[in-house]
Length: 88
Image 1: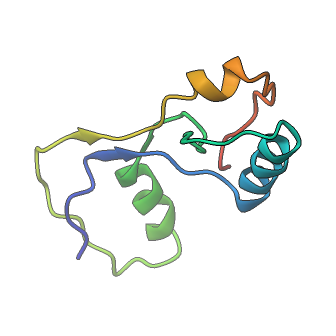
Image 2: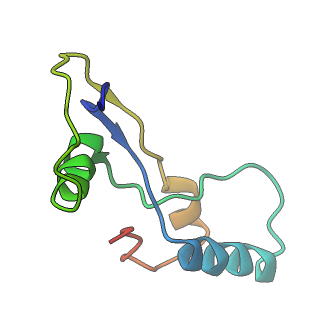
């Protein structure tokens, strides 16, 4: 049984994280910065894809919606240009 799926999260591939880290290293960046895709993905959509492979999954219907995804403005200001940070 899956619950609390009406939430958005930000996912990114490990390869993209490494690309950003090496970019920041080459820029001698120090400080705090968001490393993410900057795109929100509904957890329920991921669960639906998983359900295609496991029909035993059940969803509880809840109405709470949370949205957490990163602001990449600071990273873009540093000149990072990769527009395809999608996790899929």
